[in-house]
Image (cartoon, rainbow, N blue to C red):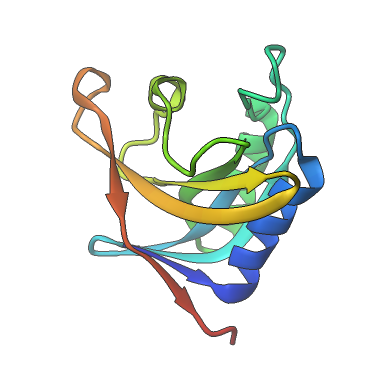
Length: 146
């Protein structure tokens, strides 16, 4: 399960709308309690894909390192990532699975149709190794802002 503050949920969806027709991307910082990832904050990242940004996203590795440092400084960890699917469903693609490497992390996908965020789903990267990884739909629980 992924617990997400309503304001972070809104920020992710707005990010997808702002970058439409390209994919947006970002990092989720938080804590893990058992099988629950609790998001404390989101970090917007720039899509640096050299491929079509309408169908792909890449986060600069330096942004990931900065996010890891920020998480460490705040006593948190990277608990997931998010991106948008312009004019496509909020479901992972084969490319999303191939590019997902953080086993145990959540991958949030927002469908954006004609500049408007429609559906947002979350998937956890399950498995033990690259060879048996898979994305499994998980519950996305919105919580009131503190």
